[in-house]
Image (cartoon, rainbow, N blue to C red):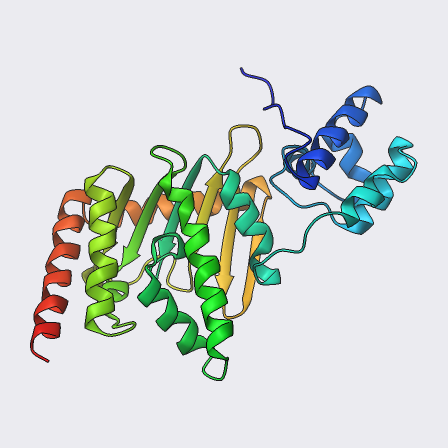
Length: 280
């Protein structure tokens, strides 16, 4: 089994903290579970801190300094972490997403952020923030499109999504924006960059009726699940909880139509939007 990935301590404060935490813990002869126990943190959470998947909080830094005799190292460098450009409830999930080896996502209402086009993203933000200034919306759209650059790598992360059929039918931004974003998805699928499936209305009730699921796996840290609601988000690392969401996702995949049939459906709906646009 390969060992943990080597972090470049100069790449970011978080990488520096993770590399130093691993070094000092091993030097002290502690397991990840041993170090996490006084902070009521799981061993897997400590592993995610060491691999740079999770962001260290100040109260954790203070305790690590105390346990490992680090003379304030973790507190000083924890303060150096840059503020995230993402909302607080999504910041850690976005950082984890950027380091993920695989991302599996069920989208019940909206096309996932990593696949949104500018017009679609603008409509999403304007709909959610009707009184925001145009400048604020521009900044949000730019951040989302920057995040989508994650898929410019030809192989990593592996991205597999299940779209509820309602995502295809909800006219976010109007028919032109919908045709554009759906063709963007089909282009990525035909380039074998993503796997896309559609969960049809005909399937009726299923295990994820109440919300979205994002599952992320890493080469050197335990997997995570992220659940998002209206202005809220939860990053889950408890192994039993993550396994339960993995089972939910597997059942969604089993209920969805095949990738080939899904691609044909998405293209067909895009054509319907094209025809609608031409009528105006």
